Length: 459
Ligand SMILES: *Cc1c(COP(=O)(O)O)cnc(C)c1O
Image 1 (spheres, helix red, strand yellow):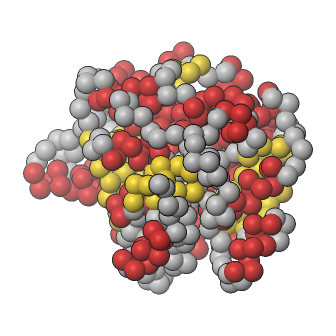
Image 2: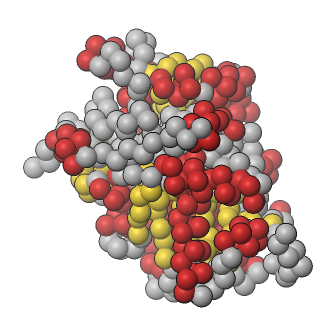
């Protein structure tokens, strides 16, 4: 057993009066701002008015705000946050002992709510602004199911309708995720479906497709635009989502400052980039303002490597090419990861804010193969007790690798990583790993070239 007599608590919880009351908008401190969303027809920046057809008005303001560093969290959202926040910042004493490393490892655990991930932080904010605007409901997509679950919880709390388009392979592999959403009152449709034009078109072209996030986004946007009193909401990628997720980083920073802990390396998994962006935001702000220096590492699956092998280009956010264009690291909106990929983080693109920071050399990125991710997940579960989500386990993998490097060099680095959620609904994936049936798939250059060929021509 690890020695438990120590001055840093095993779990650091903030007191209610120490909780952040504002989100931090890292764009305000960026010299090179992320590029604006473009109207795919005119190729001009999307105006607030155009965006309001799809998104709630106040969220449009947040999306376009590159200026204000702090944005007040409305009291109603603070009250909801109190139901499951603060989330603990945990010192991974047992993992450190297991790895026999001089490194100090901390993780910020976002899985302590029924939806099982950080996604609730933005779901409640987006549902709140929809309700405040007097809307009837919202539509969305969900891949692995965590976002759809979080949004259903938030909508149930506020009395809003919630229509979820769920990527077909997850709908089939994760029936209990679907049932949790229905329990919270959401309607759940496997995507692609025949309920939308774009879904019917995709089905006609690819009858056997298992679906993708990009495809479910197209359907959810169409459903929102075609239903009175509805707007569309998205669980990652967008600037507004990263803003809401900054609550993760704010809490982490307040907790670390309280105990005089300074991180050397901050690590997070990157799907659409919102959790990592949220975790690193206040720390990145210090670097951007020239006050501090930290290493930031984004971890992505080798089977869906948008940062490490993608292009920094304007692209559609969806497969059906109905959304605005975003300048981001992307594999092309037509890219669909191998069906053998079980670890989540399947999105073809990446947050424009993180893309910009990565492009400017402010952040590193690595890709990891899924068998090594599950190996890290199992090791972590056995010593720290928490059964991690496969997505989160990408960050665990790299945190372990960094800690092992410290064992070689003797450096006492402080490593912080985002443990975004729990993996109770991912037991088919764990089963494959435990049976030795999991394989790694790395797309070939030719497969990636096919995705890049679909990028919109921009001149
Ligand atoms: C959605 C999700 C992710 C990916 O988050 P992004 O913010 O899109 O990068 C990671 N972990 C868990 C548990 C998730 O549910």
